[in-house]
Image (tube, rainbow, N blue to C red; front, side, top):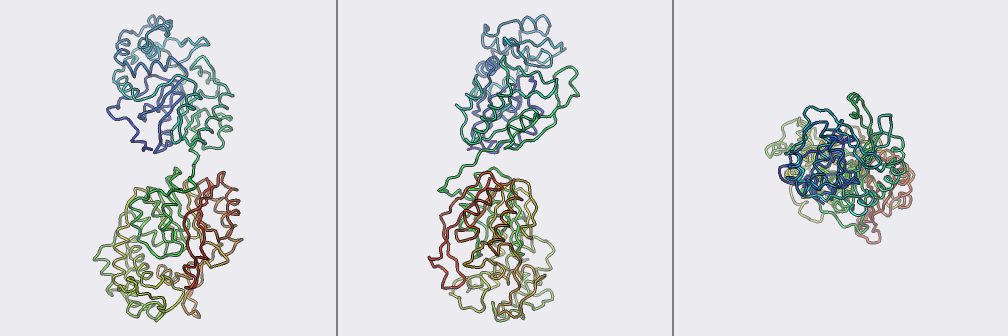
Length: 634
C-alpha cells in the first residue's frame, strides 16, 4: 500500500479543479475532509461524484469515480478522451439568453459525446447559481443566470483535468454496484450522497431524475458498515440530520458549520454538515507475522531490565501497525523500549512510569529530540569538581560495588546534579544507571556481594568505561521524529485521558508464584535517579532497600479493578495490553473486563516463552515457562 502522497499523479496539475459549479460541492469542506483521509490507502473511489471537488483537490492516481447521472459521466469521459474536441465545441457558444434556452432545449442523448460534454459545461457555467437540477423526465430545468462574464472556457483547467481523468476509471452506475465491484480492503471511499433535507431551502437534491429517500440512506449506511467490515477507509458527508446520527452512531461524527449558496438571497445563509469518519475494521493474523522495525528502533541501548519487551518489539509493532493512529501512550514504560519503538515509527509518544529511573530513560531518549552530551562534558563528569557527599560510599559500602566505584558514583552524582540542561542531565543519569546495571551480576540489587559473578565482559570493564560507553549509546539513540513527545513520572492511575490514539499497557504482572515489585530489584539505581529523595531507606535490611511504591497490581482484586479503570479511561483509544499466562486476572477474566469498554477484543498469542523465578536455581527452569499474550481492544 502506497503513502497518500505517492498516489497522486505526476505532472503539472496545478490548474486541476472542478469542471462544474455544483450545489452541494465540497470545496468549502476540503480543509476538514483532507486531514481525515488516511495517510496510506489502496485506490481512491468516489461513487457519488457530482462536481468532484475532493477528487480534483487530492488528484489520486488510478482512482475510480462514478455517478448514476449519465450526462455527468459523459462529460468526464469526453474530457478524458478528447479534450480538444470539447474545447472546440465550447468556443462556439455565446453567453446570451437566447442561446442558453436553445442549448437547454437540446436532447443531449442525440448529440455527439463532445457536443454533449460542452453543452453540460456551458449550461452549468451560465445557468442560475451553477445549479444542476433535472425534472422527473431527466431534463435540465434551471433558468438562465444572467451573468455578465461567466468563465465558460477554462482551457487550463480542462487540460489539467483531462490528464488526471485519463488515469481514472470512470463508471456510470448505482453506487452499490460500483462499490461491490470495485472496493477492496485498504481502499479509500468518499461518499457524498444527496443530503437529507433539514430546511425549507433543502429541496435542490434532484441531481438525477431518481430521488434519494430515507430508505436509501438506510441502505447506504448498511453499505458503509459492509465497507468497514471489508477493511476500507470511508469518509461520508451529509446534512446534520438526526437520522444521520442514528445511522452512523458507531462511528466518529463531526458537525461542521457551512454556508449555503442556492438562491439569490443565500449569501449569508449558514448550515451544518456532518463528516462521518469510518476506519477499516482491523484484521489480525493470529499467526502474528512480525512487522519489520525501523532501523532507529534498534539503536535503543539494551539492558537486562526485568519485563523488558526488547525481544517482543516486532510482535507488538505487528499488532500496533494494523491501526491508524498518530499519538501513543506507553503507560508503564519500564525500560522505555516500546515507547522508543513507537517514536521511531513517527508517533507522538507520552511515556509514563512511576519509577524515576524509567522516567529518566524516557526524558533522555523519547522526550529529547536533539540534545546530546558531548565527550568532553562526559569526561568532565568523572572528575571531582563539586562537593561530594560520599552518600553511596558510606551507606552502601561493601554491598554492591568496590569502594573505588562507590566513590566514582558519588562524584558523578554531584556533577550530574549541577547540569542545568534537563536533557543532558537525563542522559548523564541514564548512563550512570546503565553503568550500575551492567557492572552488577544479573543486573539486580536483591542480594549483596558478587556470588553471581561469572566473569563476563561487562563485569571486567571498569566503571569509568561503562559510563562513557553508556553516554555514547544514549547519544546515538537521540533523534527527532518531528513530533512533540513527553516523559511523565507518575502513577498510571492518575494519567488523564489523552487524545484518542493507541495506549500500550504493560503493568507489573500479578502472580501468586512470584512478586512483581520492581523497586525491590532496582532500589539502588532507582535511588540514584531520584537521589533518594522522598523515600526512607530500611536500615534493618541487608540490601538497604527502601519501601516499595504502592500499586494496585499487588493483588488479584486490585489488578482487576485497575484494568477496569484504565480500560474505561482510555476507551476511546486502541488498547494493547501485554500479559502472561501465569498472571491474574486470567485470560478469560481479562477479555471480560476489556469487553465492557471495547466493542472488539482480540487475544493474540505471542510465540515467545520466558522463565521466571526469584532464586538462581529457578532461572531457566522450563517448568516455569509461561506464554505471552497481547490483548487488543478496539
